[in-house]
Length: 389
Image 1 (cartoon, one colour):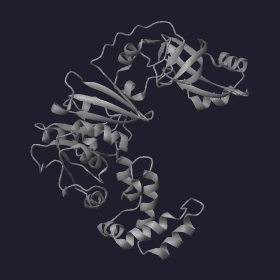
Image 2: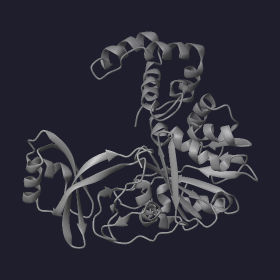
Image 3: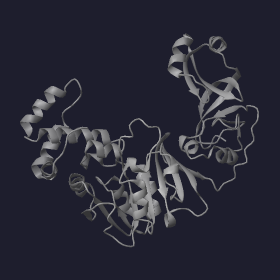
Image 4: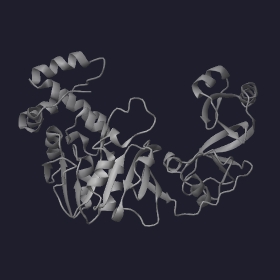
């Protein structure tokens, strides 16, 4: 849960004395080995040592997620839900030149980026502590308000509902969000609305969404965004956007999906998770001249991999059986093995232990099913550069 900040804590952290304390505590290692000693030192620096120490630790955690995190204020929960800056920048671009209201602005991670491109921008939230932190993080108008009781007119609206504990369920329901998705959609049924959701959301809970976009950052699927009306792209209902370093590309269901099922080619391609989650594997294959090994499996194959990805050059392939795989790995002197699996009930970590690897080379094995036949591909993993093809 982390430390529970109060409004007095936030006021102190923004004060001259608080900034000085933050600077001193930031110089402490605060590692697991030094934590007790460092906290005792922090006690001597300030009476509000708990708030200061927590802020320093959260800023360190946020460095890989939020630009200029060293100046920000966070709560632990708010940081976990905050959008990574590259993703927030990407989503904000659809609001360029618009009047925008972020109705669940929290500490301001999305609001900050919206303010860079919007004509006018306002944020609101019910949590007074997060609003106070947002005032530190963003130089934009803020108001305390319930997302389900609109306080602006004529604006495009964006929301990032919090997720309740789904009690172990595999799928989400509209009521699992705060505010609930269906109530949010009803409230803004006449507005251009964008709703950020976890990528694992069951899209059936949002039949009102005109376009669903899955976004990945550096190989990890980060979010689904539900776009409506004027914010959606005409003729597109599904989109996958991949952000990797300075490279960005997107694919939609408006593109062709002509993709045959054929024998394995020279390469195995594992499409980005955003492409898979958006249901655009066939569209991706058609764009790059690839084909499927099996129509129910997301692995693709071809004789030339797309540029800018990590692909797997096939060395050998055949029927998968553990004994045969062990012999194949001994034959190629493999001692370090990456195991990728789709369509088979195989746990990579358990299998790796049973294989008893002892060689000096490294490889990747792709285990999958072609029809009803378990198949193993021994591969060399290759990062394909933009200029390689």
